[in-house]
Length: 112
Image (cartoon, rainbow, N blue to C red; front, top):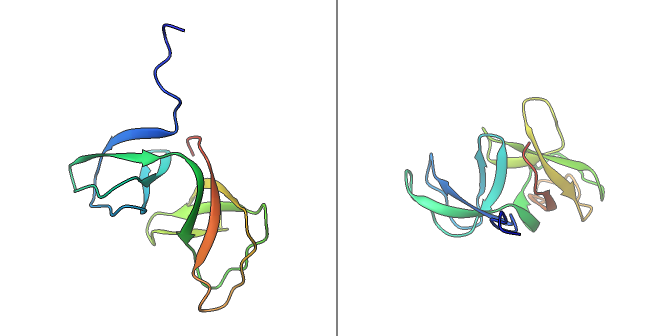
């Protein structure tokens, strides 16, 4: 196919903030994970697909398959859709305890 550009698993961005490798990055309606450190105003890559351990709101229990949203203001995942961006689904159940701050998410790889 002469019009093929890429597999679409990674995307180059110009960062509107500083991101560390592994941080969630929302660019317009596209969500990905920083593949490396990206300086504010610098260029870097984000991973659009895959399964990642991401920070979550501590007061929420997740079941496998629940929709997961990105809360941009808190830089963490939530199951609350209102004012947040759908990024994927939980692939591991996790409790709501104060020490349960990480959820495993399969990114949906689409714009939100």
